[in-house]
Length: 265
Image 1 (cartoon, helix red, strand yellow):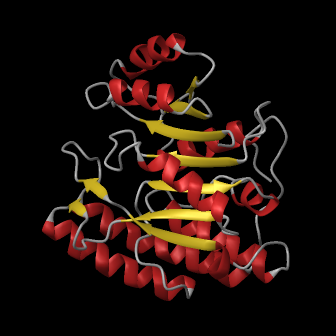
Image 2 (cartoon, one colour; image 1 turned 180 degrees about the vertical axis):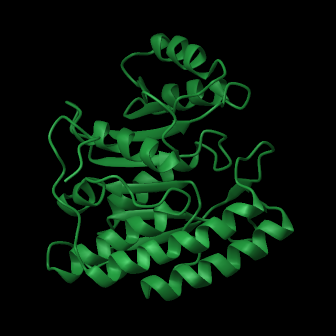
Image 3 (cartoon, rainbow, N blue to C red; image 1 turned 90 degrees about the vertical axis):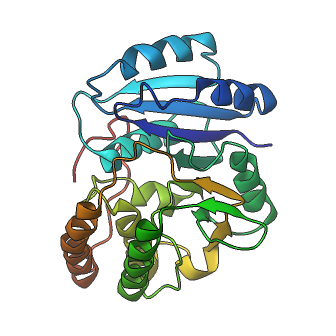
């Protein structure tokens, strides 16, 4: 298995971190490394993560944001750090800290990228026979409305943009897509796809439709304590307008700045 970096954004996750699951994952797959990004937590997340990463510094890395900047920037900072890491990771992912998507799916995502020409694998929460997808009914229906809007905006037949489990091949367009801070926070996944579509439109990236695959997760659990609230779907509506304006302007992101993931173009 090629070396893979998994970014785990953390904000006040002290009581929801399943450290034993991460220990088992690192023991089972030495080629998968984890980058924990503490997004200005106000509980003991920092102390817990620092102590944990010291257990296995070859596979576990701790990054600290100077202040709470939101999930989008925490993910972007971690991805940029991993992309510039000395290990030269072939694949980079981001994964929700609550492990709603179990870590056992990380090797599956890697295998999907290795076996195909795809650049992106997106976890998809599809309740099918033989799948154990546990999701609150209201959030499911709100999610379906949201996904329909995202699909219309991007002109992509995407089922689930917001699942917190995604993996990318380390390509020039992926590095470009993460090069600038996102304009939005709650639906940065949609903006990320939009950036890749802009790069494709400019002839600077692969065709998103042909190089992206959605993987119906075997298991997904709606973990108590989620920071997503129904009001955020209203906020997402305003963020859609920002992404629509970005797509209308048609300006792709700048190249990834060397050594400074916070730098703006």
